[in-house]
Length: 289
Image (cartoon, rainbow, N blue to C red):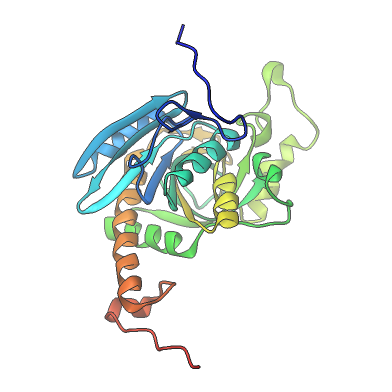
């Protein structure tokens, strides 16, 4: 049994040493760019691709590393499965200075042109996660930041990885929420049509965290995106656990691109990236008085 301790506040509890309550990280542990796998073991795989890394903390579903990707400071922290633990991770990482987040996950495809082993870059997500509804009206969109989407696309092109860009459906349940039967073949009416209906609407996949991440990032003024390895195909009823290595490599490459673009923006005095920045550090015009 662990020794008793107390926080000065129940509203925003922290651990001894001013560590964040769930992720157990403190000041200086977390960098601006953070990769967010769901699986704690995947943080080790991500960190192996860095120039240098140090293990920071491991608590519950949250396993955290920080280090350097070439000369770019970067962190990764696992979110666990679903919106609830994802929101906790984002809240506590943001409190330590993170502002750019890339989910590195897996998904089940809903479209015939998508294959197991492909990557999906989410441009937005249907908010069937449940958690984001506690933050804002359901009509608020869950949209990935265009700079992160663009960086992920460019990373896929550079690494010659097969990918798709589009809308995901984020669910609160892996089984019934994704039209799988529950225990004892439990179903509700409409289960058998959900995959077909979403596919007809052009939705690319089922997954469980993107909508929460995108909604909170939008509310707080952060940048967020997601790259997902397709491990299941719900239309063809196939399951092959592959593509994870590609998703990790693409996410790491995207961080390097974002860091470069951020430096170019700062040099040019611009708030937003556009392709014109790649031709040179042209200064933004002074505002007229």
